[in-house]
Length: 213
Image (cartoon, rainbow, N blue to C red):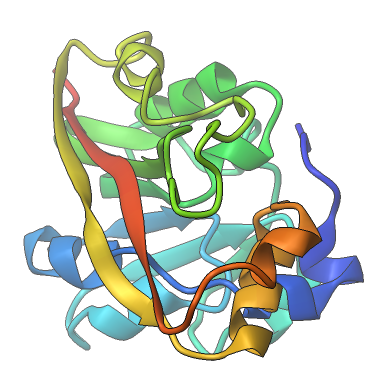
């Protein structure tokens, strides 16, 4: 289901230059009581935010990300074909990952399948109008943007709510950091040389919550 170049494995420095626009992991962690399925778990940022008593399972399609994840258990798997039984987990998450796949509806349907009735699903993503200071014309559409996230999640869930954000969350302090940010976000390289620093970037995106009926 991969839609973007495999930069997590072939270009690790690119993804390391990314900085979160909002700590969604810490935001939702108090709502998670387990068992939690963290799809696209990466290096385990969500697991690090959970209490020791919360049962957690991580899934990712990147061997390098799983190797760097200190939390266990983790499973190497495609989010479009999860190796779990129906109605297994109390919470399922897709945090900052659905734009990496060509068929996000299929991935959301799989998440709904393994979620228990009454369980909560979470997904987050950026807006195409993110970072207007660098990209005033907007980013090209991906397969899962804030503009269509609720509609996509709604193909598998009836009870869907969306929380949007639109504000400057953090400054980029150095030119090298801005260059790394531009590389990771596929912003033209020359735009890293233009702004005065520190640069406060306006972050736009959303967190989607859905409950399985």
